Image (tube, rainbow over all chains, first blue to last red; front, top):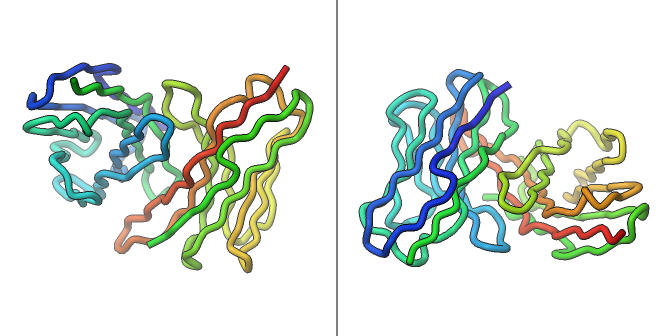
Length: 112
Length: 115
């Protein structure tokens, strides 16, 4: 079964600073990959999904971007963070032809 | 797209009682319905799922029912225990196009099991 790694686990960044969050997947090939954001006490908002290397779709207009340089690596970035970017960021994947999404442990981001 | 509504937003039950969480969906093309449990500070964990060709599925104390005609599905937890306390999310999977399917999540239910 697949294992999802995310790092860092926690991050505190000043407004206007850049961001890079990384997600890597083990135990599956050709996964669909997803980035979600979860505000405190709220549901999950889909930010990006990818069906292959360099194939990324954005769901919500914002100052975030995503890249997939390798089959099992998904990166979430920003050039300049906003206060509203604070939240819990979750990476998820589906393996092969499956549609069950499995989630990583998440990264808690606080923008001050 | 899909719209999933989840109720209640909070639920408190006494230990040993049953808990029921209900969700409705809008897109008849949705055909897969997972449920996730999220503990504080952790990622959601899949606890049970059901496909549209099945009406009910059970795994020990957890069961899920699906009514395709009414477009609603429910999570049932029996003999609740304090460790069942968490936020529960329902979701519906619908075809986005190509090989991609997308999950739309409900807004979550905070379940508290009182000892």
